[in-house]
Length: 317
Ligand code: GLU
Image: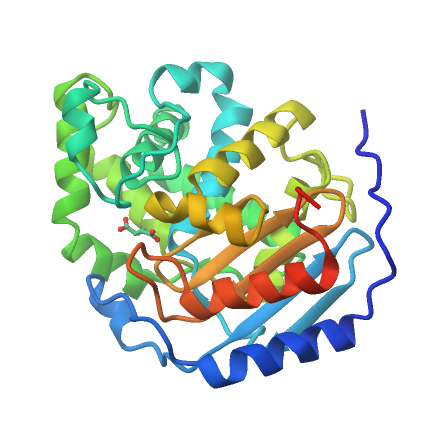
């Protein structure tokens, strides 16, 4: 069944974007740039970009929307989509779908819950999803397929993995290795840890700009099918589920606050990006490198909050 296009008021994008600009401008640079991945520490905290992709293929942008950044955990939404398409319901035997209430790289729950991560959007859960995909096709082919999809959806062949960021994360990857070995000890990792982590670090290191990201994720706002190309990424049922998981788990121990303030399924990454999905309306990608304590872009959240006030796009209306 196709998604009933939500009746939305005609939006004057120029005035919405100029309102966001005036709210964000005095706050630029707020938050703390992630430095536990050394390659991310050097990013200019004053950067700010935003893109809104609409069902008719139009993209409205603001600021540094054409400058690539490290999408980091936003990639977990795309690997979950791939996982649900290729592995299906079986995936939920290895990973849960409850909010964790814990930091993105927490290990404490894993022991109590016998190596089954709370959800696919925390590091441990995303490593398990990646592991399933690596089992099917190997790390290199999995990443090649993912990049190919992103390029097709964004209609932009320039999208790629930033190898310097992937290398930097791998060098500093003790915590993710600990999570992976821990899950392996419980029998919840199918491949050698290094093979799975090679793929995980690579997809976290994909570099995209706001325009490409908003465009590539548009299928999530339209029942799993990209409204411009007609490519079905996931079934409409899987699409509803991905959005539900994003709403409840997309920002780690900051997910409740994000739902309260913004009211859209979303996913943040420590590169300072946030992807938000407004079902039936469009997608928004925002980038500002300074993070709050939970690892969500501080100014990015403020921009989204302003956009919601201006457009009425919250799913709670
Ligand atoms: N690649 C990062 C990590 O594994 C992702 C964290 C994030 O973006 O929230 O630590």
